[in-house]
Length: 371
Image (cartoon, rainbow, N blue to C red; front, side, top):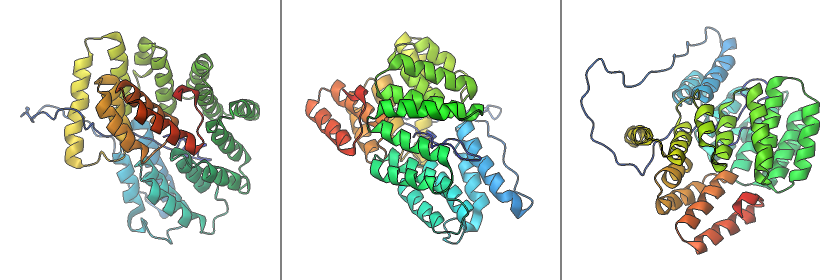
């Protein structure tokens, strides 16, 4: 999922943390290991806030750690901090908006939308963050008219930079790449904070991707990461590098990223392009994640990563197509359509490919890569 138009104060990107296993790998039998063997290292547990005034910052910290470390357990800690007020209509704007952010991160888009509607009914001095999050969810699901409406409402919340970026991103998805290009440049000229510049460079890079300008996209992704080493941008950059057959650069880029499923898949893709002998070991790691994910039954909503794994690493376009179509029922970002189209093409199913392209066009999405 694409990052939102930046949390005005804290969170930065709308999180799309991909932490599921894969339904295609073979589950191996569990072998006994010595007591001294380290199976997994847990991140630090957040201390409960000592005062109610510290509650909101503590929740935001947990959400940020979930994104930075690619670890969903921090989302559980964030929910635990909200406690009994989770799901309560009178929880207040801040808690409801943070609850929606957690739900969004778990791909619970329908529930997140409902929670945001509750937040927008509260008496808050500004509704900008809730509207930004709502616009992100609408874009992720291919509802561009609703996203535009949310973006326009942000202007009334005195958050002009974010309102403009929100509108430009939505216009870009609908093929207005020239408008977005010039608009982003104007916004870039108006900000001085490196994190804001990095965010805008990333948006500009994705605009160039959809316009088919790969070289420009690569330059802009590099500029963004030079200013802020954001995980989402690193993944998008890696995808463009993989398309350009620059597998070595992908491995270098992702070397210090957290070992999320999304990161491991890109590493596996790079190793596959290089015919690297390390690929089987990495596949074993990915397959092992499936076993634990299946036991936890937490792999719903992560069919995108499963489809990518099947298509780009396992070379099974038929299985990838099934997963890609399942994924499209939940999220419809350009990458989701692209995986589905490529799966149908490699599976030799032109009719299904045509149907997918028609469905993408019906949303209003315009992306030259789909051609």
